[in-house]
Length: 351
Image 1 (spheres, rainbow, N blue to C red):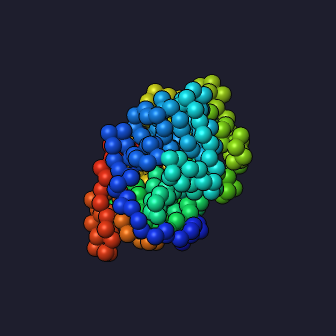
Image 2 (image 1 turned 90 degrees about the horizontal axis):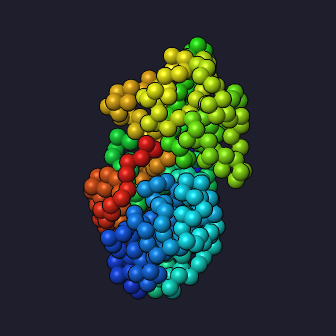
Image 3 (image 1 turned 45 degrees about the vertical axis):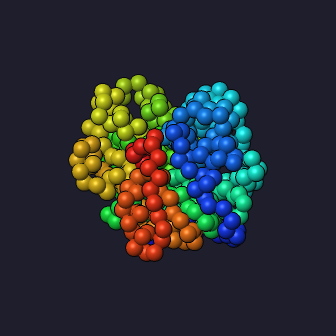
């Protein structure tokens, strides 16, 4: 049975005074809060941004001021450099800041390390902008917190009924079993470099896999950041240490783009594995030539998307990106007022 992070219900809904569209709406640069004069996850540089998490389709460089969790800010510095923004404003979970009369609070989204939902309150209305989120337990980040609100702004990355993600620890055990059954082959695991790589390592360690894990150079800096923040990942070694050795019987993590390039050819008859919610789609498994698909997603699946939207008690659901038409249709069938915002700049990451 899949374990879920139940979170806690934060606060109550304020009296209705102001139409939400009057103060939070799409703009050429993304979702814009008019009274606070800031954008949330803007896709181009702006004077003031609130960033929900460190993935590149949400966190970009070049902004004037960036408000985000301390962890997200450290991720941005690793990815873009210390000058990724003119000014960083770290805000821990649960702390409220007043920006132009708008009360701004961050609570965990459960997506990756430092990921946050943005709670906005202004003139009696509460809007929650979820960013990306998941409800399944993840040892590398704080669990999703459910917040009652008037408007819930949700993603829809896996918003089709076919997407029902099983427990991630089961997929970790599948990988360990394959390693044991094929000791003469290198297992080459494709993972998104931020969040998925560290989560897979933590899941494997929790299942008792304590052997060294080798890392493609593109994964090293972010894994080191996780460990500096206090998330233990065990014995990690740069794959470059192997110096051309084929590493039979070992596990090597790499970005998905490295699975089919010349870099991967150095290893011993590699088993190509890939950890992603998209591995539930057989066409994607065949397209990438994946021998060992592992269905591990850092996004909410279809049941969790629908259940979360309903559980917030929101009178309106706004869908920012993903399979918005299916989710809007399903929520409408359930009596919810839902609509797509059609924001640009968000991509289907390798999850």
